[in-house]
Amino acid sequence: MAIYLDHAATTPISEIALAEFNKQLQQIGNPSSLHNFGREQRRALEEAREKIANFISCAPSEIIFTGSGTEADNLAIKGLFWKSQKSGKKVIVISSFEHKAVLEPAEWLVEKEGAELIQIPITSEGIVDLNFLINLISDRGQEIALISVMHSNNEIGALQPIDEVIKIAGDIPVHCDAVQSLLKVPVTFEGLTALTISAHKIGGPVGVGALVLKRGFDIPALLHGGGQEREIRSGTLNAPAICAFAAALTTYPTDAVTALRDQLISGIRDSIPNALINTPAHALPGIVNVSFPGTKGETLLLLMDMEGIACSTGSACSAGVHRPSHVLIALGRSEDEAIGTLRLSLGAQSTRADIDRVLEVLPNVVEKARLAK
Image 1 (cartoon, one colour):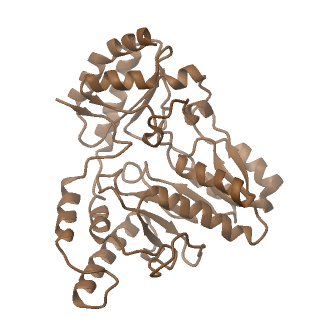
Image 2 (image 1 turned 60 degrees about the horizontal axis):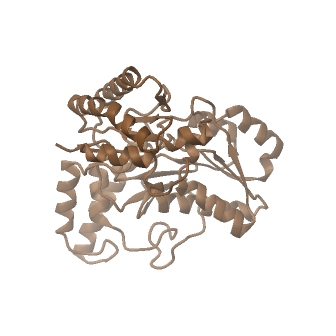
Image 3 (image 1 turned 180 degrees about the horizontal axis):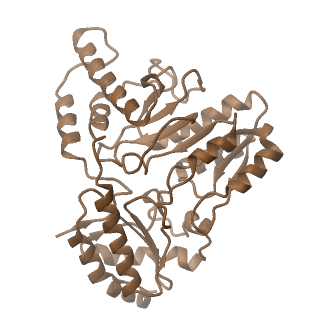
């Protein structure tokens, strides 16, 4: 039987979300239309918006629906920069292991808009260096357009001290990518200027995300047209997916998934002594990132797939790119260690039998991968 351990890339759609998705797909009408069909779609959509808002402690009007977390990140980074640029602020500050959906828009702004990018280093425990941020703001706070620090890292699972970042930032806008954290650990919009979330990481459908943007804090639009979503993100709203997104916000078996993660880490340490566990103690329940020196991640991945186990070499968005993960390099791993890495990510459907099977085949997979290199 195939085992799916790539929940950090995408999760299977939950039964409750699928039922809601199918129900809404059968409804007729554009939620922007004024006739009865349109009003019914709008009603269901706004009820979903309110449920999501309550879940993350924001106002419903602060939610701007998008087609993905990547779109929401781009909208936040570019929009916040352009807004602050009018005041002469051109410095973008992000953590050194942000998702590419934050890193690449920031780099694009450097190339195309004259921005300056400063990356906050991370500690050996995978936590942003708060002293670096304090000193940076003390020296150059008046130049900073925005700060973006992810809620948890998508490759190693490290949870970040977002409340501390907000306090240190003061009046500087703070964006947080919480795509990996939503539902799995508490996420709140309180104190933030912008927050990114996505449906398909929590058992919702692919193709819908949201940017939560502080009320009254408008940013330039990337998409223009019908003026939907505060005229910041035009386009016909995907009502079925949005409703399914809200439906997916149920409960998450945090304790059970954490126990399985800890069993997996312990088993790897016992069976493969020179393995390097990259996931720190303070991390998401379901992510285990481990390096096997002397191997290549792609080889490990293919060998695991041959055993019927689906996992990842790191971020799915970087799949097929044969270079070390910038996350692991930022963590202090060597290129050899970073290249030979697997991310095994568990979810609500994961079982002890899954963990036992991984621990049964992994030592032999690693040995074969070392011989292949």
